[in-house]
Every structure is written in structure tokens, then in C-alpha cells.
Image 1 (tube, rainbow, N blue to C red):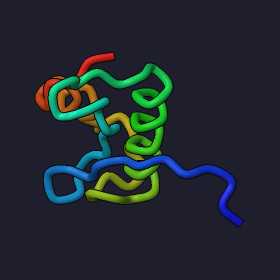
Image 2: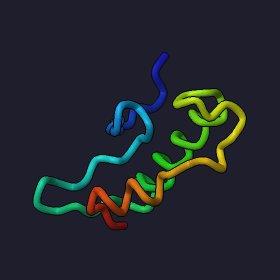
Image 3: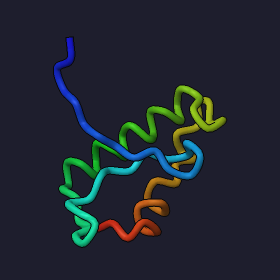
Image 4: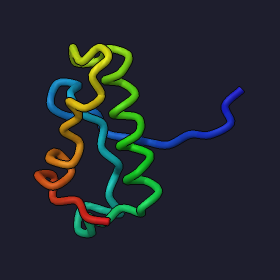
Length: 72
């Protein structure tokens, strides 16, 4: 049973999840969307996505978020 659904964008050959912005012209995201995407990104590294098994500290979420032009 689906209890919650959130769309994220997987970028750079699966290296990072990012939240969807408001629109193509408005690159803002809500704080909750930012934090949720960051959590999913770090959890995926902790379980091994992208070769980061057990190393959530390798997250480059903040760098990808900034380079994508996103803001909170």
C-alpha cells in the first residue's frame, strides 16, 4: 500500500537524487522537499547505491543541489 509518493530526479548516472523545482523558470524547492531528497540520497549511499556502501558521508547532495541552480 502506497502511503506517500514524492517525485525526485536521479542525476549524473544515478549518483544523486534531487527534488523537482517549482517549474523550469522557478528553481525554488520547499525546505521539506530539500530535506527529503537529501535524506533519500544519504540513505541510498548507506545501502550501497553509487558504490558508497556504508559511507553516507560521501554525499555530494549539497554540491549537486547548488550546481543545478536550486534554492530553498
